[in-house]
Length: 164
Ligand SMILES: CC(C)(COP(=O)(O)OP(=O)(O)OC[C@H]1O[C@@H](n2cnc3c(N)ncnc32)[C@H](O)[C@@H]1OP(=O)(O)O)[C@@H](O)C(=O)NCCC(=O)NCCS
Image (cartoon, rainbow, N blue to C red; front, side, top):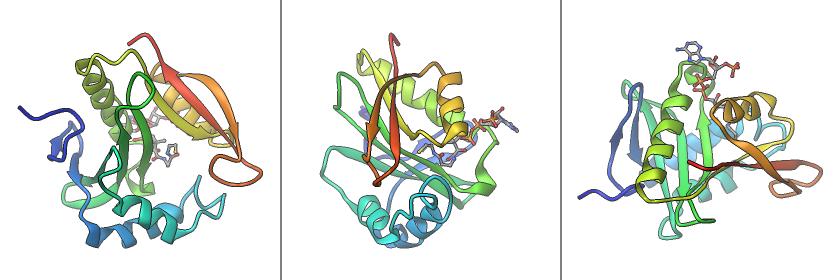
């Protein structure tokens, strides 16, 4: 049986999640940090590339692929706080507002539920109103404000979906 958040590819309604191959991480990182919220915080491309390339640290990282094109990245940490933590959800601009984020969240919730998780967690910058609205529309509620988590002078909002 394939375990949830495993290293296999996952077919979703509008996209495919493919385990990240090290050779595409630098280019993908460049594209991710060029867009908000990372561009706003001047998040370094090499730090994002190192994060995407990491393995064996309790996170599952995927390329989001749409009709063969690189559309973004996802990273899920499990186990985390009595449930999984979606630590990265980044869709490149041309792949936003197509319902892909919604299908990734639906899969995240379904897998969390199958794992018997009591909670789901996500995080977004306090200035990222669109992402906060997106998560709240999907049932997540703010539970903590974390100053300086990603960059000085910026706050991150931790959101939780509970009960599942
Ligand atoms: C935030 C994010 C993950 C949302 O994913 P998404 O695929 O764009 O979201 P969805 O398409 O499911 O829904 C978002 C919007 O598209 C609209 N939408 C949903 N399905 C749609 C469709 N088939 N056609 C057109 N619009 C659609 C929704 O009404 C929604 O509008 P709003 O957010 O402006 O109110 C994505 O936009 C993203 O990666 N943004 C940049 C990085 C980021 O902010 N990451 C999250 C926090 S770190």
